[in-house]
Length: 270
Length: 199
Length: 103
Image (cartoon, rainbow over all chains, first blue to last red; front, side, top):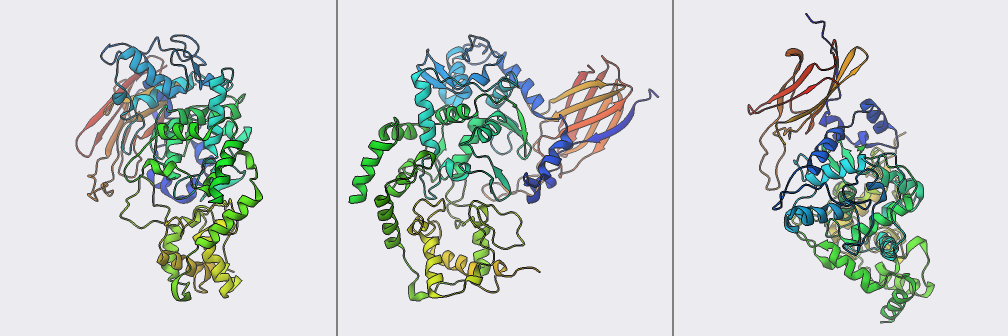
């Protein structure tokens, strides 16, 4: 007998609990209680580890790592880089978010094709996580608690903000929805899901700082790029391209509105 | 015709330094068609364009009035004045949030997703608040005026409120005439749970 | 990445806190795919946690546990450098395991 004794077994994620409607009731505080039961347990800690391994893994035709990828603070600098995105990159003469930049580095440094990189960036139902999700989770962790500070010096950065704002209010499709339909007023919700007002600093800060996040209901880390894509799906729009000017512009609009607030990702969401 | 001209003028004047053609090319480059959802969904009609101004800027009142009139003129009332279908089926339409997303099966009927934004049956706790509560809607009576007003709101909400957030369920072909009748019954029928308030 | 379990084991006073993420679809057998065909059941049935090769947790799971289960366990008596393992076996006979040392 070594004296080892089981004290408690906790936090198996039980699907049945999560699929009932009222468990989504963030307003009623039920989800907050549920989240409190996790304490500081966030399964994203393991996805962050995977992300770090992907960064240092030799991949692609060039069998190279991403170690010399320049995320805006110089080649290989990852500390604080996420919080400074989206920003203008001279080598490509455009504004990029974290996914657009990683996509670029995978092609440039590792020689991977756009087809391969774009094929499956976000987990589909039943997937156990992707390289992109893991890398973004790790990079966000490297900016934890740092203020959101996207670039707004370069003309193209300001153009991205203006395009992002215009896209935010752009109504189209059979349902006439824009981002603003759901995210342009305070205190609103769809069913029981609370909707941040993304036109205010407070709302944008809560939304922007918490992504990427581990989605308990899906068992994977989701990125801000995925969040945008899935909003547009529900807006009845076509498929939003990862790293496209539209997604970069929207993230610029959000990040500028949220600027100054500390990053708190990877977060934990329902 | 007049609407089209003012629409072009507005785009040239008010969208800040994002030109309409830049917006259009960014959108077309930023999205891919998938399953049944094509890039044509990114094109705006005059009403959508008028209602896409940032920061609640209000548009030209004359244009707004014309858009309202056009919306009103487009409303197709049900034949023989028969507005009310089955509230049971209407309840299903109100609960169903699917339809017209690329993840949806186009063979299946679209939903109205009313609960996303409105309270209806008071026993349903999972309702949104983007729109007003419609609980006890039937208390407003079943006069011809109420029936036609409600049908018009469902068919094309912009006939009354030019930049309402609500979808145009009839005008955009989201729901069929029969589904609209069923939703009408869900709202008006005295036996519908919408109108049966618990003590 | 299926099969590999990521584990952290950290001392908190005189107890050791173990956290583990298992990559597993945890299919209930009740869901259907897009074509309407049932998706076969595939879920973890048995989970074991050991400390220096001694079993400290042995549990039976079922289809109600979510995909990619996250397990948290605390036991007394661990020391920095001790070996901790977590392993599972699912209803198809597949197994997965991971190993770490207490920090």
